[in-house]
Length: 158
Picture 1 (spheres, rainbow, N blue to C red):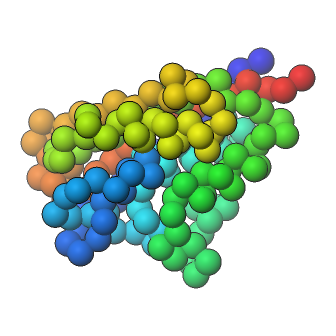
Picture 2 (cartoon, helix red, strand yellow; picture 1 turned 90 degrees about the vertical axis):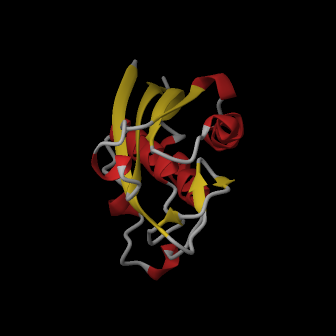
Picture 3 (cartoon, helix red, strand yellow; picture 1 turned 180 degrees about the vertical axis):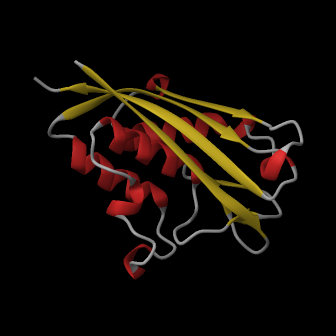
């Protein structure tokens, strides 16, 4: 039996922050603002997994009001999400999209897939990452922020 969940995240672009997506540091003149490392891709994947498992969302498990999560590596949050679901579910696959005007992300996607797959305990070919622009429209188009969305299929362990 398969269960599906959807995740979405967005963070504002600011100066003097690292740009981290899928656990990969992307060279860029701006980074994403957030309580954690603001890794929009990993946050969207966490929410998709939690949604498929009917376990709420990332904010319920790792609230930004808790100083424990200040500047935390989002891959650690993903590991904690996996600990919540592994006794009942296996990841079938993840499909995700990063929406940003700049920088170009294609060169970094293989490394993102590999890092995420290790934590998700799946093969890299079970983690799909796409990147697109918003054609200059909206907050993403004017480079005020970056968004990501993800869908996860979980297989119930019998």
